[in-house]
Length: 452
Image (cartoon, rainbow, N blue to C red; front, side):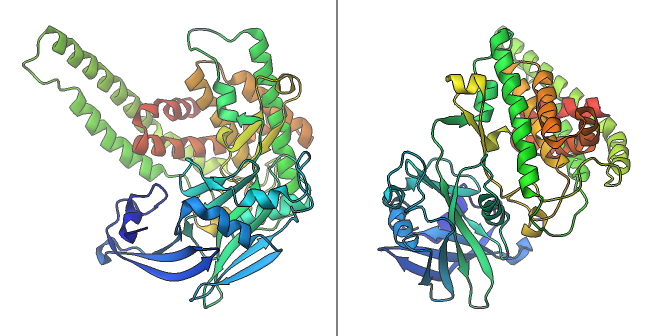
């Protein structure tokens, strides 16, 4: 970047709202005429927050040259001045290329990798066969996604893209920071969120054939989820941690939103007839929002009580283990809905095993109940229902039945055990929506009112 202070304007910068004091380059590795830099972002002392480390690619459009040089051998090391940057290949993709890809084509495909418009907390780069994810904000320690992908690749878990390798920064003290992962770019599949929300209009029920397609896909997704959990059972993790449910944060956000909604009910004077009608409609919307907020606020004590008495590992059908940690339809690819394969036998690829990126690595690596993932997917089906206008119940039932059959458990028992995790997820969603998408607050609000 010409001016490293521009980091504050990047979508992946996680210090939004903080006043940056200065940005310092702490390490730099020159690779194939390009460079990877590690920078430290220090905040104003009044912010009361520790500095953050970020990874920067000098010329992102030429990242393919870096990756071609770095993954040319099973392990390459590059001096970064203060420390080093290390690339490791878990799979010899110059020989073991996917079906239909000639020997050595993947190695050549590295140089064709370019940025994608999919930047969030990380940055995405891809060619037609390869995908590279760059972790922007760096944290010391073992990264959950690298650890999980290595494990699943070794166990030959098929419902994920092939994992090819990773890279890391090692500082002078020996602390390791994951920088990114290289994996297969899957073709001929689509985002499962788009799949389950496609072609449905709220006022037009889905035709029977389409309903059957979605139910069949949901059942198969349940089976794939159980297979994922079974494959992850042998992976160690950090100590179990109690669920963190942000009730206090939600209470504050609701209180602030109620005050804002009350202001919306005060139409300004001096309007003509059309303006008066618009003002009345605006006031009505504010009234409805405020009523929903008040109803949720009134039920928070009851929801807190339910949460306090519900979480127990004694009677759960699923013991704590390593899990996905941020599981929803947007983290899954499904075989193309236009093809007979999706109608008859849908296949899935599960993505993004890093957990919630705002959490500490120890939390994301903790063994937790698989019910966390199950609850996340059930809530995702309900979000899809809110967008498409279709009833999510058939897909939820099919998902649980598929999971239960593959795990040799009872679907109704799983649903009952998942209830407190669904509550925890809905509280988290309500906070997110009030902060970033207030028009969507109605979706988790409905779940919270039903659970109370």
